[in-house]
Image 1 (tube, rainbow, N blue to C red):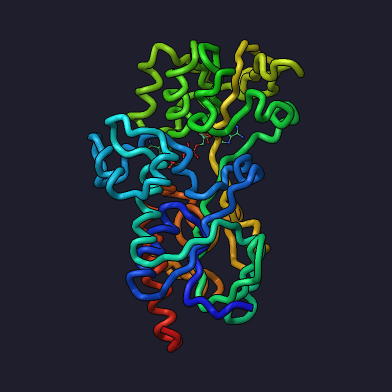
Image 2 (cartoon, rainbow, N blue to C red):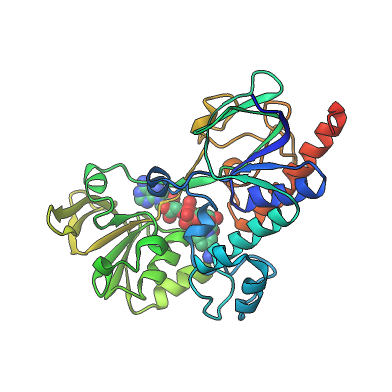
Length: 352
Ligand code: NAP
């Protein structure tokens, strides 16, 4: 078995990278498990760099007003990572760009990265043991869990049947595919994500139907107004997706909607794509009950305004412990807090 790590950070969204920047600058030599690049993770929305890697422009991360970041990205990021990214188009920072910048900043201060998942943990004794999908178990004096959350599905059999053949939970990942070009599409949900996805899809679609189960959006006012003002978006309030329609040859051909206010009232829409944007579930299954979770499976912070979990020496940061704010910038903030908490705890233990 390997030597014992000071602190292992699991997850590679804004929380994980902020934690690693702080931990590295505190001379803790953090080891980050950023997640594995697998088809299973792609389908589950748990690839490295987290949910921000699946978004387009990030308008609300302080410090990145719209502008041409091209030269900055070229100078801040290594060539091999830069060439994997789409060219910068003169807008504000995109999610993938922001995540690459955070990752590089963590590396610059000495963070070590393993591109693998932690599949299982043993928090019953110290040092803690973490089991990657490949290689030897890892021992750690402290652990920061920053595994985020991933997109929800409705669980309809027809949704499952047409996944990858017209059903998606990520417009930014899949929206530009030829199958969706100049075709009518539908987005399900009423939050900021649903409106962001619907707006994004108008670039490719002939028209976008936005279906929400209530008669008012959960989204922020500014986002909701964007949907109301967009001539390519048609809003269907008080409706839910009952069935995805399709065939074996072309995949999705339509949807059957049910009214949530008039029993038995149904509508059919001809669409070539269905995009789910109905919220997220925290990525806590691998913890197998070893940390206290809320009813919605988010990690519980045991002390007010601290990132301590129910196991001493294990800290949580970002969306995995936050079902309320769920913002990139708040995740980054709690990532910082978790590293400071871990550093102070390790110092108190005499191990740092
Ligand atoms: P969300 O705010 O939780 O919204 C989820 C939406 O899906 C809600 O409208 C909800 O309906 C609907 N929904 C949930 N379960 C459903 C079901 N089984 N059937 C039908 N509809 C269902 O999630 P989100 O939109 O992903 O946003 C998450 C967080 O990220 C928010 O804090 C948001 O502000 C933020 N965000 C910000 C931006 C931005 O600023 N540009 C972009 C994206 C996300 P109800 O409303 O009826 O509950």
